[in-house]
Length: 211
Picture 1: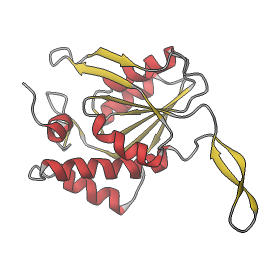
Picture 2: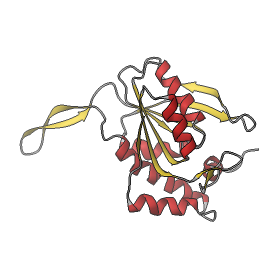
Picture 3: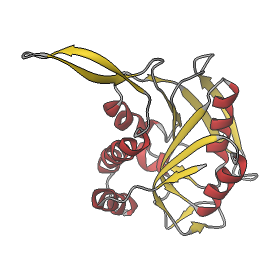
Picture 4: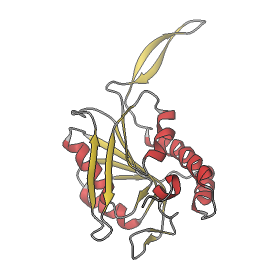
C-alpha cells in the first residue's frame, strides 16, 4: 500500500476550519468539496492517459486525454457523498458507483446495505471516497468488493485518517495495488473509535443527525 499526504497550506487551513465545532453546516459542506478537489489532484497524478490530435484555431497539435475505460468514482454512503462533487469537478467524465455501508457501533464492523457498480471493473481507475479512515473497516470492505469485481488497483481518498486504520489497510492489502490519499493523519482513536482530534461525525456535520 502507498500512502500520500499532500502538504499544502490551503489543505491545512481548510482542515482547521472543518475541525472547528462552530463551523456552520453550509460552510462545512463547501470546505469538504474544496478539500476533495485538492486531494483528488494528487490522487489522479498517475491516471492513465493517451495522446490525441487536436485542432487549435492556429494549428494541429498533440494533446492528452483520459484513456478508456473511464475512471470510476465510488463514494461510500452517506458521508462519501459530500466528497463526490469535488471529485467530479476534476473528473467530469468519470462514472459514479455507490456503496452503502454502516458501522455496527458494538462490533465496529461495517455492513454493506447497498451496491450500485458496473459488473466488470477490469482496467478501470477506481477511486473510493470516505471522509474518515478510522478503524479502516469500511475502506477495506469497499476495496475488497472492487477487487472482487475485477479492479486491479484502487485509490482511497479520505480527509482524515487514524494510524490504526492506516495500519489495518496496510496489513490487509500488503500485496495489492492500493493507494491511500489523506489530508491529515491524526493522533489516534478514542474509546468509541472516533478519530482524535478529528472533526466529529462527518456524516452528521454534512447532513444533520438522523435518528
